[in-house]
Length: 244
Image (cartoon, rainbow, N blue to C red; front, top):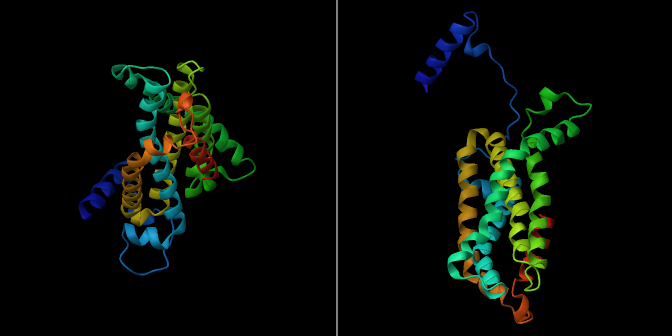
């Protein structure tokens, strides 16, 4: 740490010889934890509600993504007679949504940020961790759109391309929510950012590992007709995702 500070001081002295590292003051908007104990991921999950809720939400989204890994083959092999070697192509919608969303999201998020900051001190407000969650606001709308889209278009009578396209808004929303929540956790829990990210990773892995175990059974509930075994289960997940 001393070596890093001395290196930073040398670089700053080259830019402005009169500046000192101790003279630099940066407003700290990070969370101040009320408990003077050693902080780890389990402590944050049990004693920080905002960290717990964000971790649960991202874990739920990753679990739904893993559920799609089981639901897509079920839908496209049963309802659209896809051979096994072509089932992987049904995930193209998710891939396009994730990669395309990263490209086109920046101007949209900039416009949303400017709208939220109207009449406020932009420089001061952007230093607050809460503004890292603006992309998640858009993502939380796109995710249930993709889920309901997939749930209502998995019929045999609907062209196969329509449920594939449902992965675009879902993948886009997942990327926005994940990047937004990760940035918020690092910025809000600055001194404990590693523990905050560990808590998020722990909960995501635990939930995502469990969902594929019962995804096929959920999508084959008795009230589902054989002609549209796409899973109205996705409808119920979509309702939960919209509430989140």
